[in-house]
Length: 125
Image (cartoon, rainbow, N blue to C red; front, side, top):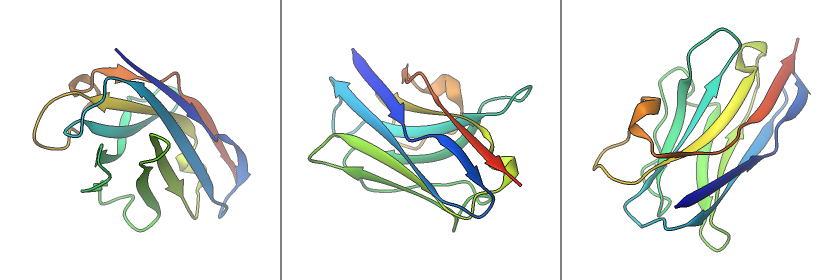
């Protein structure tokens, strides 16, 4: 079993930055992959970022490259999503997830095995 707890969401203005945290516990192995997704009201869950549990091979969709970064604090078993230059369209509930197997990053929600409860990010214009 794996437990994931997100934190760090909130209400910010356009152009601000936020750092989300995902604290992980349980049986996570070095080959597992961590992902961040987001879901806005009335929309499907959208891939935001992924990283191997060891902290290597960050991956982002082209639309978010340059604004978002993902990293891991190995000592704390926490994965971070740093979001800069936030826009109103970034407003969503952000979820972290873990994929227990596979050799590549997964871009769809159904490829992940465990999920956190989500944290709300609201960006005002």
